[in-house]
Image (cartoon, rainbow, N blue to C red):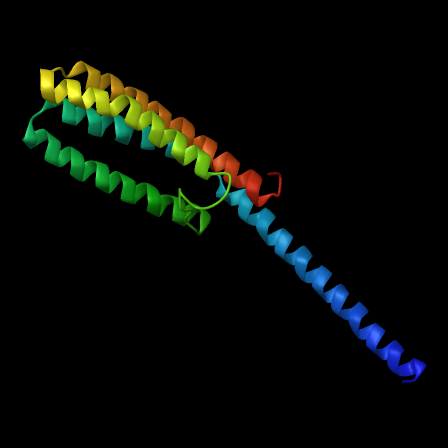
Length: 162
């Protein structure tokens, strides 16, 4: 091989390295732009918490004619929140995806089960409604707080800060 042939190969590697660096920079810029729009607005978390509280409060009433519309409203509200998030951000994030956000989802589930299951037992076995309403308040506040935490974790992850 001649020196010119080696020089040509080295130039190709350098060009490829520059192209790779440019592509990496473009990907990082895209991630930063995605992170800028990934955080849900404050009202999203409030609406989620109110939906959870409303559903559990309707269960506490114990009237099927109130429960069925409440379940329908809860489902419609969740669908609306999902579509609003997708419209605002252009994507949807799975709550149980791998990454730092999974712990926020698990914290919510643990709090939900820890409060709602005993309250539901008290409601069904002893006809006590107030524990379920209280558990609904805890679950609603926890839904709002963990939703905000989830969004912040996701944004930090997109920015490479985690």
